Amino acid sequence: MVAIYGYSKDQIFDAVKAMYTAVATRPEDPYHFPVGRAACRMLGYPDDLLQALPQDAVASFAGVGFPFRADVIRKGDVVLDVGSGSGTDALTAGRLVGPKGKVFALDMTSAMRDKLRATVTRLHLANVEVLEGTAEHIPLPDQSVDVITSNGVLNLVPDKRRAIAEMFRVLKSGGHIQLADIVITRPVTPDCRGDPALWAECVVGATIDEDYLAMFHDAGFLDIKVLRDFDYFAQSPSEETKSVASRFGARAVEITMRRGANAPHRLVQFAHRADPRRLVRAIERRGLWGMAALVLALIACYGTLAVVSVLPLVGLSLTIDEGLWTATIILFTGAVVVAVAAGRRKHTSFTPLILAIMGAGFVGYALLGPYDRLIELIGFALIAGATFLDLRLRNAARMDPHAAAADA
Ligand SMILES: C[S@@+](CC[C@H](N)C(=O)[O-])C[C@H]1O[C@@H](n2cnc3c(N)ncnc32)[C@H](O)[C@@H]1O
Image 1 (cartoon, rainbow, N blue to C red):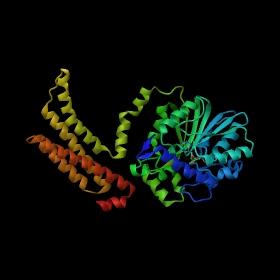
Image 2: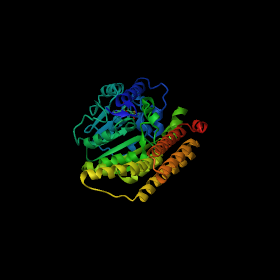
Image 3: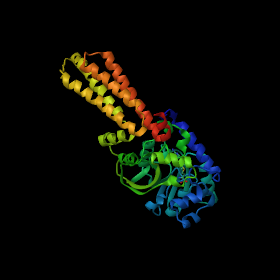
Image 4: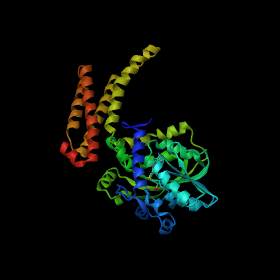
């Protein structure tokens, strides 16, 4: 079971199912996101396309873009709609592939599947089949699909890498994906990310734009193109949703890509993910420079000590230059102070900086004066407290700038 900041994957699934059961059964209720025909119009679905679709299927539309802009579906294709909902896109794909093609409409919410199944039966659509399942376990054989379409779904999926690997598995080599989804610019704070209700509203489960595209690249997709990038939440009827969305830079994207012949080897995938440039950007976005410098200072101090004491046990020895060792620890400790000082511009509180300076003073005194292990430990504890407090205040400032200013 995957846990997301204290909430289980099942809790996220339950919240998502509850939300989309409501959209399926009571589309006229107010929602925090645009729903139905008005939402389709706002997202660019042409009027003639909408007129050809049954009213009740369109009424429960909850997509976030117009994935058909990619124009990759051809007559006779086999198409999979991941998270089809009540079927606006699956039925549209059914018209595009014609009687010789086939559309599989996959959704995990039974109310959505029931609604689409009723439409399919009523209209005697032989080329649309409704499937029960999740994006993480697609009930189709390997390389059985020409095109995957998806609209507003991946942001809701807890294990996105697993879902993307499944898409790769069922797609034929050279097959296309067209999708619309929500991405963000700034990382979601842990407290928000763990709230299943916010997750179901399409904001906090979303991934940073760059990481989102990288997940497809890592999985072996090629020619990844963003066709449109727009402020979907500007149309939200809820001021609160607009405000949460703008804090994280949430917006919709329409993307197309094609499947490469083979998935990269696991080691190559790992190398992509461990790319130091990605790591540096992730640290920067999350404001983790203080934490990174603290880890380096601790490794320099206690890691070196551990190595020096373990080596003789295996018949080796290492002599370290004490001056260089001390200078390295002081350098990283100073880097923590600089990183925490930079945090003051975000949250305006002096407390973390004062703690960091005191901690650095203790560590410096222990290293440069008569060595005292206890003073050194107190110094590192103060520095660690300073970096954690700085991070908390930065996150609070992102969520509520006024509260953070008051804290200071
Ligand atoms: C935002 S709605 C979009 C529905 C549809 N694509 C549309 O445009 O109207 C998301 C849909 O994805 C489904 N869904 C969410 N997570 C899923 C998952 N992990 N596996 C399968 N379906 C999922 C929900 O049940 C819901 O019907």
